[in-house]
Image (spheres, rainbow, N blue to C red):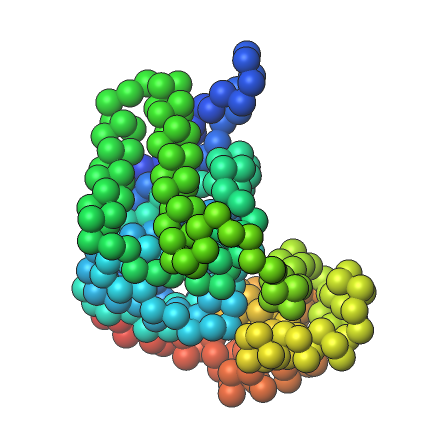
Length: 305
C-alpha cells in the first residue's frame, strides 16, 4: 500500500500557518517524487488530505472511484482523501512530482479558496492535461517550494507555502472554468452526481462498520434500491458492489502488509462471520484470502531474488 507521507516524500515539513493574529497551527505537508517502483498494482493508495501530482514522464493507469483513468506526461492530477484510488498498470519510466497536505491543511487552504463548482469538476475529472506554458509554470512552482523548504525558516516557509498554494489553486480554478467554457456562469448542478459522491464520501468514512446499502441510503434520505440504481448509472456498479469492492481492496491491503489472520481481519472490518467475508473475497478476486496472501508473498520474494 502506498502511503506518501511515510514512504515517498523527499521532504516532510510541519508548516506553521497563521490563521488569525497571534494564532498559529502546524500542518503537515509532504513534497516528493513518485516512480513506478513505488506503487503496486491492485493496492489502494492512501491520501490523508489532498494531493496535487504532476506527471513528468511515462504513464500510469488507475481506477478512481471505480472509473479507469490514465495520467501521462504533462497531466496533472488532484487526489482527495475520500477518493478510492487503485493503480492498475504503471510504466517503468513513470515519474511524477507531488505535494500532499494533510486533512487540516487541505481544509484551510485548498477547500477555502476554491468553490464547490471546482471540486465537482475535480471529482468528475481528477486528471487533465495542462497547456505547455502552464505546465512550465507548475514545474517551476514545485521547484520553488522545494527551494523555500531548504532556505527559509519554518515560520517563513509556512507563510510562503500558504500564499503559494492559495495562488496556485486560484489559477487551477480558473483553468477549470475555462475548460467548462462557462466562465462567470453558474450552471445547474447534477444532483444525481452530487449524491453519488456523497455516497462515496460516506462509504470511505463508514465502510469498516457498515456494509449494507440501507445504512447509506438512510443517510442520503433515499431508498436502497434507488441508491443502487443511481450509483450504477454513474460509476457502472451498484452501491452494494462498490461497498464490496472497497472492502476487497482493504482486505488485499491487510493481507499484503500484515500477518493478521482472516478471523482478525474479519473482526477489524466488523464481520461476525469470517466465512461470509471469505466468500465475498473469493467472489471479488477469484481466490481465497489465504491463497491470495501466499501468491502475493511468493511474487514478492521472487522479485527480491
